[in-house]
Length: 154
Image 1 (cartoon, helix red, strand yellow):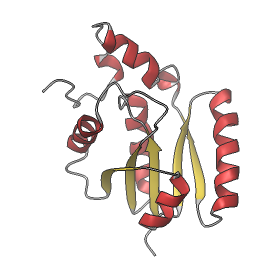
Image 2 (spheres, rainbow, N blue to C red):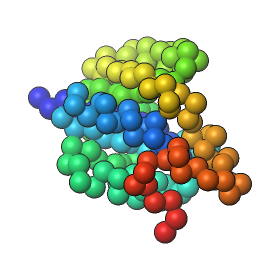
Image 3 (cartoon, rainbow, N blue to C red):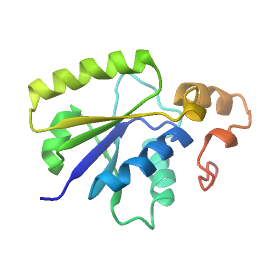
Image 4 (cartoon, rainbow, N blue to C red):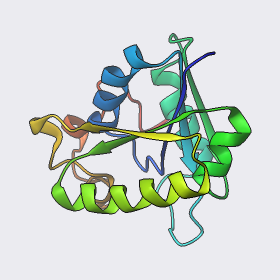
């Protein structure tokens, strides 16, 4: 059986921290779905199509990675695509507490999905999409926080 993982998030924008989690997780799984979730409570900075395109271009040469989107509950999406694992990156203790609670609820809802946590490497601990969005919104240079091959404008 193929080991399939879903890495869910808004990825608005996709950062070097996300890229690092994926590069470290890829050896653990046969297939990795970078799944952009639709959150009706959030107003996106980048439209969904732009995020799909930007991330897709980063991984266009990696056959084990698929960039996709979903609506609804993440555990339901995992069932839909046959994923047995949810991949999450942890930067802080607050992230851990929040993600632990979600993982426990997800496990109750679908015991066939295991959440796998990877700790952020120290240099990416302060990097989060909210801060990077603010830098971009006000015309700052966020390049050092974004994947080297990522193209924001086009």
